[in-house]
Image 1 (cartoon, rainbow, N blue to C red):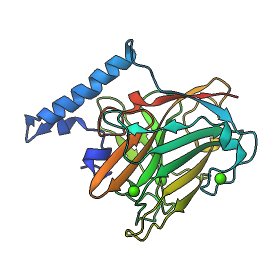
Image 2: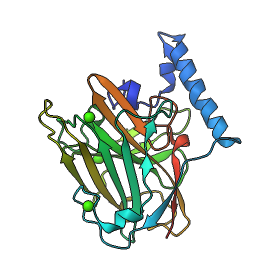
Image 3: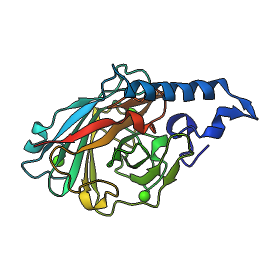
Length: 265
Ligand SMILES: [Ca+2]
Ligand SMILES: [Ca+2]
Ligand SMILES: [Ca+2]
């Protein structure tokens, strides 16, 4: 168990988890093989990296949780897939990204008939409930990235992750984005589980000065960052993990599988 508290979802499969009481664990070996083989296939031919042309917002975006500003119309929608097998989620998620000279913007529209959450504190274990996430590897080293999570109560998790392949990952929760802005709109009722909901939507604006590792901040046209977007939903005891770029395993911390975010006009 690591700081995330839920190894099946969030941990990075530290090396010692390959073994149980000193014996090799079949699941551990298979999981590591799965990740290593998927990394090899990315380096080879035949696997297309998810690519998103992030366009510039021409008009202001009010961070109110509603993706209703004209600027969002310019952003190509991303439909999430199931993280493990790239299948169709029971609860669809559409995400969009934009940028301007001050911020990187990400918006999520989460279809959901039971929107719920209880946690409200910064850096709480939001991933144990319902949440949307963005992981951003601004220098593309597949070893260090920031992680942002927002839940339906607009609680925030922000951390810096050191996750070099073959080493135990470090989750640095004391990293905070000082200038982040985020808001949630819920078409439904977060506190009542007996009422059928429709959706929840999220807007996040991340200021360039809060990024640690990018070659340029703000980025220059044509710069490529590695990014992934995720959602965790829980419905009737079932957990659903979905992603922009599926990782192939029930684990979001696979930076080799992040998509390519290309900064465009
Ligand atoms: Ca808005
Ligand atoms: Ca839900
Ligand atoms: Ca933090």
